[in-house]
Image (tube, rainbow, N blue to C red; front, side):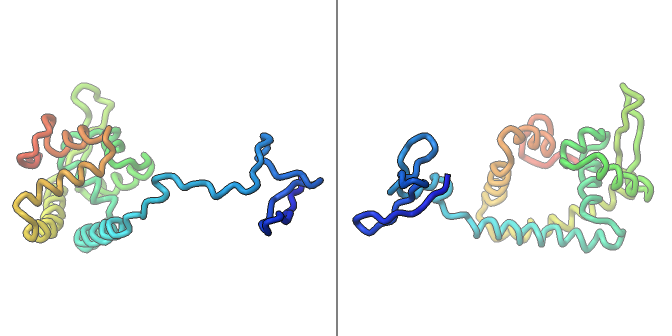
Length: 205
């Protein structure tokens, strides 16, 4: 039904439907004179642009340190992520790696093919299921993963040196809080071992 705008005696304009009837919401409720719909509490809160942008720039420079090293090997960030978690978790299965990285199997297969082909990762049959493929870093893979980790750790050390004594613990707590709540225990176990103790990082395999 066509809507029109009618002039009210007080000078305001009232939406009307054809025939002069006041406009309704389709359920017979008069919408004339209704004010704007109140914004939800979340919509009324100013976005945290400073944190959003600081996280972007911090991550940009953090991964940039590794990018420059990876370029020497014609590798990219996807290769780095796969190599990092395979090195930290020798024997990782394809399914476990997919769950960590949240990428498609097709994307993972492409990167793994290159890492295996160039001698940085190897596959072994599972001990209980011979059909299962378990991933292990080679000696070259371990060396590259360690070099990349040392490169990125230097930036962390510089940043933490300027923080109070409990700076590292505060950063850990903040980053864990940024992870979905139902994933935090899994992530803690992956980083620090099954008991999730945060006294030191899980030793290299």
